Image (cartoon, rainbow over all chains, first blue to last red; front, side, top):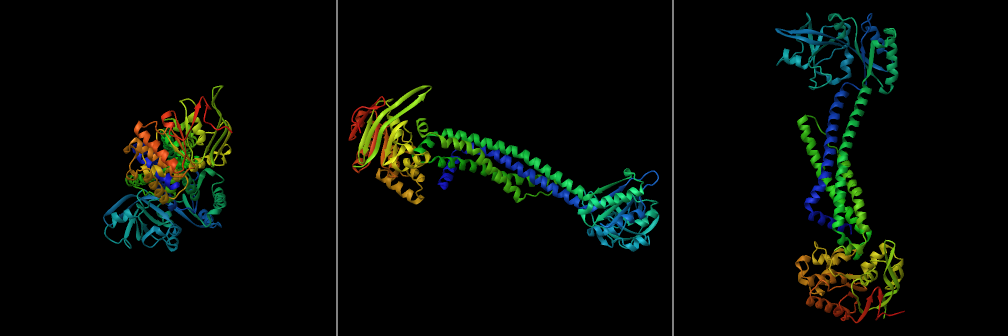
Length: 390
Length: 228
């Protein structure tokens, strides 16, 4: 009987082609917008999350503003932080600007960063060729440099920079490695940077204090405790002036960023779902018209022995058929739209199976919910009244 | 002889506002197996209401209705649907064929609701159309058939479930005289084969073809009724 109902529903939909297509359109638009929005937002989230995660989820970023008396923390303070239980290592950054000269080529206003070996150890992908700055370089304040990809391109085009001598702010450095090119919009682009040992930088850049420090955690679950301990050290250094520094836990930043993105994706899907509900109301409207039009048919079927359940089933199936077909078409259109937009915006989209199943399940549910009332109306029709209405 | 239809003190009233309208008043009627009974009455006499009650489309306000040994008055809607499906073959004045289904699909319709498998359904429907003389029109749509042919499709549909009674409501009402006569002739033939037929009509010339005629006037059976 279900097979019969499907066949009869199908015939009825075919007979009212234009009406059925217009009715379906509501669901098509609803599902297509849900799929497109979720896919694009998910794609964008993945893109940005990957970028943020690259900054390091196990990293605590300490920014020191200093006070009038003390403009930053000393190497001693950094060592005390490094000695904490949960700290795998610290990487101070000393940052300055300078000109870089190689042969006759001069690059002005280049970011010179003093770092230590921990910085390179934390991200093995950082180095493109050559070697990283090691502990010996730091201890002997070697004049060595690891250069960013843009610098390589401009100074050493078509040649191997390793072993070449460059002059930074009047001092000669040996290039020992190159940095991997980071994506154009990366938040932590190092393409235009020259990295030298921070001990060397303290001397050559004329900076006395460390103003930024990255501390790498061993166990991120203990982050809160460790941050308290770091605060303790910094409070001692700055005489309990908490305005002198700020501590950012990258793990927290990533987590809150991800929760914002997933909220945004749900919000957008919710807005799109409203259009699906509107589509459902369209289906209900058409089903009600259909019930009225087919009053005689319903009466006849009842006279021939159709139970109320059989009548209800026929109309529900018709409504599910409409919404599900609309859902499938919407799914295809939504995916196409997502890929098209992704192509234009230039991000990767992810049309996930779960999103598709969700949209299909949702459209079938719309069919059941909005078909239920008209189908119930049909099943309750009194056959006498129905047959009289000719 | 077996009693197929047994109506005892059937009353039916409708309410229009506060006013009670008695449509059927203490109807007693027994129809036995193999009978051809016509119910003759003018419009407004309550004959359609009577037919709806016999056809289990409507429930009496009071009284008892025994159809083929089963008490109808205590049945729910689902059981009634089954009774209509198995026990009663309806033939309507306006044929009531579904316009989008072919003749054979229309005849199959009641078998769908008794869960007969598709192949057997088709076989039985085709056989029945052959019996009513429409072997060459099986796959025509109703609008490709004449009135008489449409009514014969409807008769085939009524017969296909092998019901206890054929219930015909003005079966010739929408047909011209000659075609109508043909249909009545076909009913007579069916009756000779042993079918029980109850025919509702306002036309005395149609009614007289039945073996027995009961008159209904103003909600009462006036003569020819068998009082218990």
